[in-house]
Image 1 (spheres, helix red, strand yellow):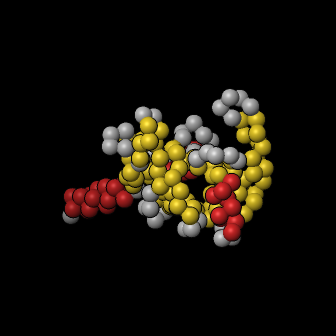
Image 2 (image 1 turned 30 degrees about the vertical axis):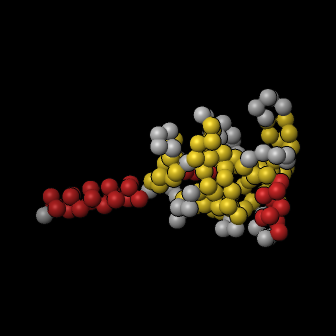
Image 3 (image 1 turned 45 degrees about the vertical axis):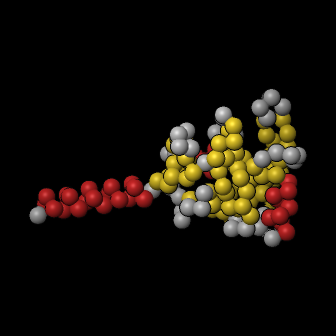
Length: 150
């Protein structure tokens, strides 16, 4: 009897572990840049560049405008960010209700920094750390995330 209970327990633990990880396809635009589909606040779909060197999720001013029109973004604060060249910039930070990465990995109450100019939305460590442990696969290009809410 104990043997069967142990086997059942091991089986249940293995199923929980398997359910906790989600493989999400990425798109390679050049040799070293990978993008992933993200839906913001169940309203707007954008292609985000994956950047583990970025501490925050960033969106463009154009994306913010769309979210505000749909009443899906709330101003939180101004943040001083350090750019790759070492310079500082003040960025507005907004809260959105959710980010759904690849259609099957959702995170709620996300703060996003807003970047001006012609740039891409960035999926940074503020969300990726919530998906830890995560694995970046090059071939085929996939992002393996944990701790998703579906």
